[in-house]
Length: 623
Image 1 (tube, rainbow, N blue to C red):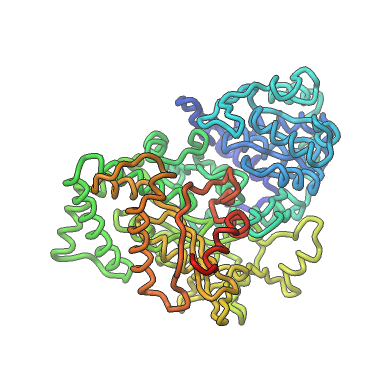
Image 2: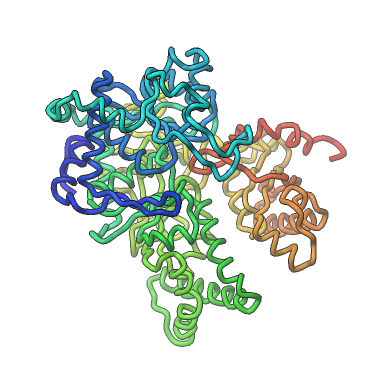
């Protein structure tokens, strides 16, 4: 990929070189729509002219709150073409976080998917002090659709919401995309060209707020130069082909999703967006991608989806799947050590591939050649499962502060249990206390309005202090072991990495998530969330009536099952790492309830606050 000064240049070059290539494929209401690279640029330019007509100047901040959809990417491109700075806001952000982001960034104009997102924006404005209608906060909001339908009801029990129920559509503050483009007719294309020609490469392209796993989000400033380096480095690492199709089921508010999207635009290859970000075998079957970036929870759900497609045919097929996965694990271990499967193992592998593995590949469209995992730690068991059934799963590592991706396992060179080697131009170093330090052209310019936080993160030699604990093997592959801030010190002074223990517990088929607690305490305890599909199978095999997730999680037989799981898991842990007491939560964790970040990582401190009384009771006499 040739060098460019800004992301706007990247779009212009792509539209000139491959104008008729399909840039976007989307599923909406079961109907697939397509847009070419030239079409993407045309719409984005018309919206950019509309922003200029509304007074958006270079460097101004424009917010985007929407699920992953074509209009999100068009809005992002329009903001960049206008020389402005995009501020993505996750659709599940709390009202207080929205208020903080709007206030901190100084946003006056925003894009919103529909009435539900508009309502959230206005609620944030009201909390910020912009009045009930947000008039003193947001000047204009461009709303993609005037009526929204949701699969699940919101907190008010609504599945359908009209624009008129949120704001007066004739008031002039809310515009449709068509009205935005119409306003832009008064702005000459030459103005966009002038802005593009004078925008320096080190100008800020986007202000992305961190997930806030431990506190208030920080606004990360990412420049055009840093993002373009990342786009080129990821393109090089993946070895993309002209006929590739990338499935984007990640939220575009997530930095890695944005990088992936711009890689696809820059290369002129297809970017497929499933309806409302759904990520199941059905969506993959319909869109037939070749590359699938995901977070571990999405990969877990997809694996369960694929297993159910086999389990649905009865016990014989289920045993066949278990046998085929076992053969695949034996074969993959040989391949990972540089060998070739031969003899009886090779024959068994051919049978397993023909009877099971090919069916699983066909269930996701038959074209998937690589899965990319990031955003949270990937369990070894899950990685081995995918490798065993013939999928190449590449785990990477990065932060918002590194433009998402700093390291990645390359195709054909993956080492399970690691997050790969640094991307081109990126340096790694392990500090004396085990912290991973990163340096390179992909780093942030700093935190917005937070000089001290910037100095704490970036030292005088240009090293970013990641806050993660890790180690490099003799071949330069990085392994992340824990978060520096999350390390627990028990009352006896033993240091414990909770994520290691949590991953160990989550390796059980019956445990979906675990939160380990015990900082300053005499022993470790845990909150556990059940894996619903595994528990349903357990109940069916033992004729236990499954009524609801909440009720079954408190069933005595389930408690005894998890008790045995804990005992078994504890056997392979050091004594100070073992879990002495636990509780099973009667609900699943969600982004909406503030339990998980948009990338589905535990909001550790939020959960500890929410269940503080329960966690405290573990250390009381008589528990």
